[in-house]
Image (cartoon, rainbow, N blue to C red; front, top):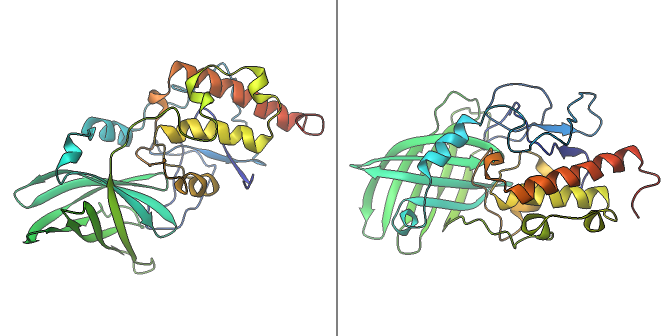
Length: 280
């Protein structure tokens, strides 16, 4: 795993310079509360806070976009009809397009992609017996916004179509997404013990820095966190159990996971300080 970027364990809020249609520009600048910060290893900013900080609350108020996602709260029962979440490849990234309302030809939804959240609104029409045609647009207040034109194949439960940017400088994308239902599962991943029980020193003291960071980020991935860090995003999006559902999952962390994140981060920090003497 490339160590160029490292996400802080407490997920503070920061600035995102891209929407899901654009290429990611990762940054360590502080800014609006619509994202989660990633910091470069060689960044001089002193953001390595005390491990006594609760990862569920450190970093400020809850992201308002996550509030919106949680209020919609697409359940398995809702996923039984045409509304629900559709997930798959979108250029180099994975996208989750969630449709939560269809009434009188008008549709409402949102997308989660590359750590970014966008509302989408538009229309639908039942042009064929087995398909529903949607035309939906992002708000247009971001230079990477665009419009979606896709069909929902009802029997097969997938959508296929295209995304066209409002800005001609961006590239269009075609996609095919399958319907999926997210359910938290503490047993998935390479290091499931980090979500299942409190870790001990024996669990972590012989891991490399990359292994420690993967163990910590897996905790967030199990809760559907959409990573802005390109390396970790590509890593988790390659795993069949992973599904990006949110942009601020701090409140969803269990007590056990909070304790383990603090322990893992303590060892990561120690590894950085004493690299020549620590680990195998």
